[in-house]
Length: 371
Image 1 (cartoon, rainbow, N blue to C red):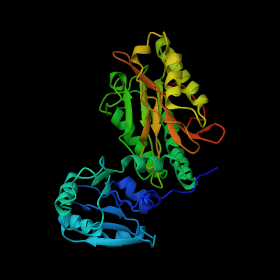
Image 2 (spheres, one colour):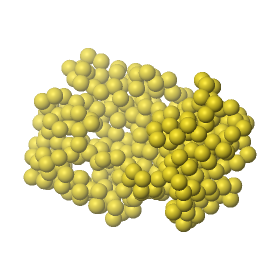
Image 3 (cartoon, one colour):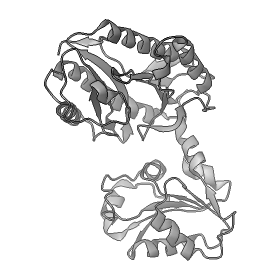
Image 4 (cartoon, rainbow, N blue to C red):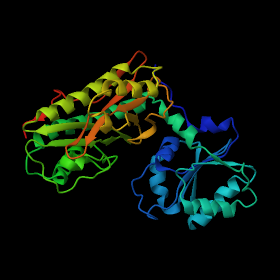
């Protein structure tokens, strides 16, 4: 059964809590407004204020035409402002003058707006006046609706096509950055609005740390290349990973690939409603137990995704989340060995009523590519 879209308005109406939504992804989820013009002060500060009786969207007045094109919900009151953040804060304070507390995104409010609000909302700075709404916003976006799932499928399809293209595009002598440029161009031509995070094309020692970025490192025959990327279609992101050996592989490289593949497929086979993140982590540990490479396993097994390529919650040892129908998550085990290289395999998985559906994957799964 596909869930109906649950609005943020439903979350706060019964609680009589004015909620100030300030991050781009949550603004989009709330009212459908989105822009990539996010350089400092280019668009200015914009936010959604939901009170028990009203939904207001505050934005710089010069952006009125763009806002009118995107925000079609007649229940959303457009509230343009002229005088910078100070003027915005005063308008928010006026709209919440009768409230003793206000919900804010602690992890997503710009400091300038926060300080301006504190000045504008004097007399309401006690411990009960500010309530963090980030957890409930995360929870609302966890279960995907039918339209969200279709957008994620479309995004995954573009990324899948790019990975198939990568199998033919990779060649010895090209650099990581050259490969990234080819793949990003391919996805743009095939319907992606951009990339949700910096594309990873990492080879050799550069693939040992997951936070490394592609550079001018040349791809060599017999080396491994880790590709981690996604597309953006209809505002929704994809994210998946394959690691290839170029031209040939050593016995050790093949053993590493087979081990990571076994971890990934074993964990994916468990996915169904009711399974806990702890159970997934424990199963990965069981597959690795006693193996010489166990110490190099990164205990980060995956995450949710949707509007963002990485959303709450992550599949880590401390997570207490339980899988529910219509969640979309990744499973992405990786082993990263200093002096040898890193290898990760990642797929996007939809939790169904009886099990799961893998949303990514190659037409023919292979480790060694011609190069």
